[in-house]
Every structure is written in C-alpha cells, then in structure tokens.
Image 1 (spheres, rainbow, N blue to C red):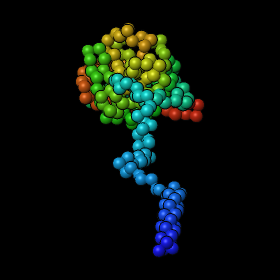
Image 2: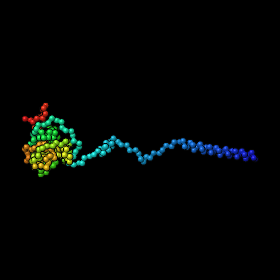
Image 3: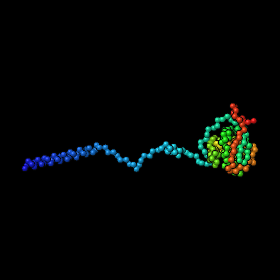
Amino acid sequence: MQKLQVFFSITLLILIIGIVIVSQTSQKMSTNVSITPTIDMSQPFQLIQPSQQVQSAQTQQTQQPQTNNNLPTPTAEVTQPPPPASVSAIIKTSKGDIDITLYGSEAPNTVNNFITKANSNFYNNLTFHRVEDWVVQGGDPNGDGTGGGQMPAEQTSKPFVTGSIGIARGSDPKINNASQFFITKSDASWLNGQYTNFGMVTSGMDVVNKLQIGDKILGITINLTQTEGGLTESP
C-alpha cells in the first residue's frame, strides 16, 4: 500500500511539472508570433489625379481682380520694324466710315499692334460695347470690356481732345489692353499722361457721334504696304 501511495505521488508530481512546462512554452511561442495589424478602411488614401494637381496649382496662383480691363500677363513688346511717323486708316462701322491717323512716332508698339490686328481681320464684326456722351469704346473680342489681352503701356505727349484715339487699360497704368480702343467725343484732358494716345480722327466724327452700344466694327483698313525697309504708307 505504501508503495502504491508513493507511485501516485510521483505520478502527480510529474503531471504538475509537465503542465508547468507546457504552459511556459506556450507563453514563449505567443510572444514570438507576429500579428498582422488591422487596416482602418474608413480612412482610405486619397490619390491626387493629374487634373487635380493642375487645378490645385491654379487655385494657389494669385489672381488679378476682374475689373473692366484687368487681364492676363502682358505680352512681350512688339519687335516689328517701327511704323511711319503717321499712318492713315479707315475704321468701317455699321454707321459709316471713320478716317483716322495713327501716331507711329509717338506710340510705335501700340500702332504696330493695332496694324497687325487690323490686317489679320481681328476687329472684323467686333462691337462698340461702351458709348457715353464723351467717349465710345470697342475692339473687345468678348464684347463686354473684359477681353483683349494685355501689353506694356506707352507714354505719349499728345493731349486728349475731340477725336483722340486711346487704348483702354485697367488699374495699372503700366499695362494697356491689347485690343480695346476708345475715341473721345469731346476734350478729355484728365486722360492726359494717364492713357496712351495713339491716333486722331481726321474725318467721320459725325459717325462717331451716331454710334450706339452694339454697333459693329466691320473692318479696319490700314493704308500702308510692307517693304524690306519696314512699313511705309501706301501711295
């Protein structure tokens, strides 16, 4: 009997030791196993598409206020040969013809720009979008005073009198609109030194005074020819 008790005691002791060893081994194995972390799908990655990058860059650019003539970055100065000291032209409108002289020596870049646009039919069928008791203004491809591009302004000494032709601009006096022009219907001395005066009406002020908003510029004919030495007046 005593031997049997000893046998059972040893067996129980061995069983207890075995349980302890198995438990410790399991704990060590659990510390060495790598658990894959879970992914929070409620916060997916946001991939920026190329079109979104362009839009983002555009929204970060400083934009000029949209005033009557504030438009994109001014173009480079005209590199054409200088025009003659004066150039004659005819502005054909839906109310009749307006004969003008352009001051090539006073505002060569402005005059060359005007000549280039006229010869390319840029002004054909554009309208006079602004008509007041002292001025008419046209040449805007948008037809509302917001279009036409930009170019550097030129300072001129000619005073603004009845029939003077000037270039529209926005708030910056150093930047002119590249297509919009105006004709004064009376003296406008407050414009002197502030706007580029690049021409004068020589005939057709009666037509200017009859113009209304929406009347069309049918075309502009420049009376000069292109020669190897530059621009010269047509005979």
